[in-house]
Image (spheres, rainbow, N blue to C red):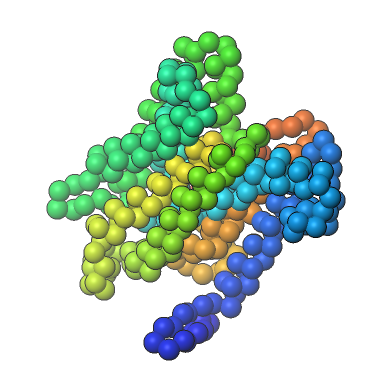
Length: 342
């Protein structure tokens, strides 16, 4: 049952269960990030990590925590938040649980942009970040234009189908680029494609934070229209929603989130796919659960990073999310197949 908070002429509706889920997810994400910061060649207990973050630790611990390890944890939290929120937008807009940016080409396009910079132009970290973001934006623009029909706009299902085709072509291009590269460059490109938080610093965390400071409020502001869009185009128009203009704005915000996350951490798989569905099950509510999905994404990526740090063999976080996400995708396909959705 929803409740309302009123302050003068302003009112805010909230759900107790959703608020509780968001609080628990935020604690899980923050707790996992603290343990990530404390993990490494020189382990630091969680209480000492918290003291260092509050400026109450010794100088050596504060240097390790704030300078060496905190940027990695912050990048993971922000990238997971962006992927979860983007996945919720595209799945709700397409009204399909498989309508994730992982599967409809936007993440692959971002990887193509980074690979072209690594293997063809030989740019540095900043150039790779810019090219990765540009790849996602150009791919989304191409998919949107191909899916667009005069008079009918862009239908969610058509957007997914065109995106899946674009993803297949871009994956083939990525494979070809790697086969034509020198051994050292091919290794660097293959490592980037797995999605990793190793070596991430404030150079990645700060731009990602700035991007999210703009995109997250925009996404939440469009959340009401997104929910009405799930009723169907005709019903949304009857309720006063400009469907095509709203859809174009949602695509722009969703692609911006994917581009920012991929530029910072590489194409980390399955977080954008799994987070919105897990958030719906946790909140037991239909419709786009934007904030719970974003926090679920942050918790998933932080926990995945923590697992990768404690495996016998150090692995990129993208390998961990890929293994867990593959099992989740098989389960999701099985239940949607039984329901006749795919």
